Image (cartoon, rainbow, N blue to C red; front, side, top):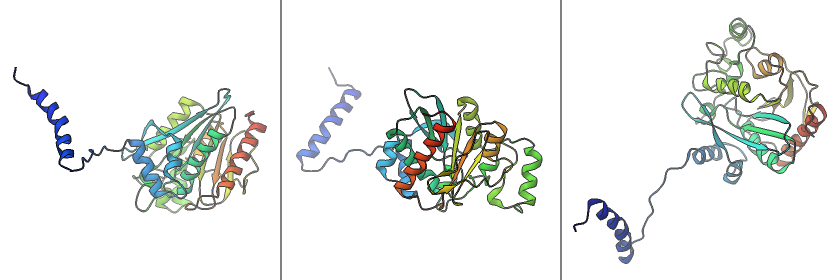
Length: 285
């Protein structure tokens, strides 16, 4: 019986490496393409301060179904206590040039793993990958829209363009977009809030070095070295939409530097202060 083409292919696949080995030639395994999360971690390690391959690998990020304008995958990590009573959404990298915000979010995933709490944490370390992963990161996404001015606050159609024109003098870094939720990144976060219904949102930014708060609860007075300084309400911002309009408390962290990540002890202290406030005010004990 004559061998078929398929059986010949199998024989060749088995025998050729053996022949090469017998001839003293090393067998080089075929390279496999990295998975999306492996590539994402490689990009973050290359770009972010104080982020190592081990830190990103431990985060165990998974795709969350969201995509950027340039079709980059959005990732998240859930850390769930068996007795979870609260759902907390932590979002970093809304502005692509605030590198420390994404770095802090990744470090906090480790703290959530190591610290018992009655919380279901959902971390989205980088909402704006198109802006951050450029050679020179930008605040806006790849269509030039400030995602933190693109949420559907009441009277957005009138207030957001007017604020951009009169208050920022058409600053391109703060362009709110042609309409609310015009961008897939802000649209994903809006839809996630509707689906998952978090009890608290923590939005990580930089570089003003303060703690901001919007919403119905009594705000934390400090997280680590950051003290409460409520800087105002902006049309289309996440704090305005979530905290004022939807009545979901929004803690906005403004790290002191967009480039340098706080020291590990400081990041942990901020985390512990957040847990303490949540226990006092939101029942996360």
